[in-house]
Length: 435
Ligand code: ADP
Ligand code: ZN
Image (cartoon, rainbow, N blue to C red; front, side, top):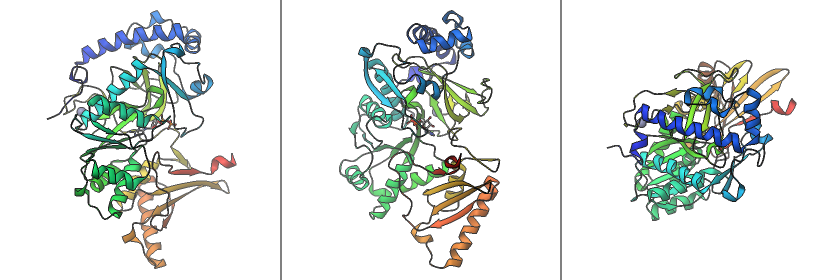
């Protein structure tokens, strides 16, 4: 039977949810207009006044904010409360450039914890569970977010942070961890280490995992579920909106429910800014309607995604977002063809390879080149050059079918690609060095 952390909100009627969002949005726009000069200027420039925003139907009238604005306004330019009201700062991982910082009041932290508590409960967590948090702790939001949610649910919390993989597994077994929270790439690495330590998934007390902070494919999910003997749930978030817990997966595992009482999502055409109807792929935009210290309105995430209001079997009525395909800036354009690293991951796992790979893109004589280094599993390893070449050719063929381009595939020996304990680096784009 499905359990909820906050059934009233998670299963609210559309009408009640919209009413709540309308009220919160109106108050939030007023709060931001009065307290954030940076955004007030943007609204004035667009000729929008707080009074023009009467409900969520008026959301499209507001100006967007982007990462460039956050960098511009660094560090205090988007702060909406006095610093003395703030209790915490977090920072982005800096995956795509200069870091930005976000501020939290105690109320902001309480709401964030609540969002993560919903995620843990949806993954089956109760106060009788032991929750091992192996996301990084520190400025990164992963560790702090799930730690707070785990406390709120009342789980016995193991704030391991990432790294020291054998010790993770040792503690997991000694202390009976039932829920593991970390990035999917780290979960895959833990799974691999379990196997190397001569253990089987049945020897682990785990039942569920809550994995996010980076894109991962369905194939990767199945592979982690098998190697750890668990059900793996997705979780999404970003520092700019608080951290993990903006959206979380339920038992249906067909997308993540967005905590709409705190974040209003929109999908826009990234080129024109036009709002797209439900079901179309575009850039995900969030408006935080409950945040006090760092309340971003219409923040462009650059994550490409689809929203759906299709009825979910779990009983939640919160809108769902599909797994993000990656950020618009993760997309590689190779000889005019759009390629996402996630498509490459899908092919690799389908063909029986490990999720350990590194994509190198370059430009030689004005032509884009793509080299995919793929690690062999020990049982795929062969000394015979001919064997290797056959395998490489076969994999390149499968890539061609999926991607429409012909990459060079290099099979490399087991263990030669660096494992990730946090967000994995999958792409090196050398073209940027020449520009
Ligand atoms: P940075 O932007 O520097 O990586 P964050 O740690 O705030 O900093 O990362 C947020 C980003 O991580 C999101 O915008 C998204 O691209 C990615 N992300 C987070 N969770 C997921 C998820 N479950 N699936 C795919 N991508 C995710
Ligand atoms: Zn659901």
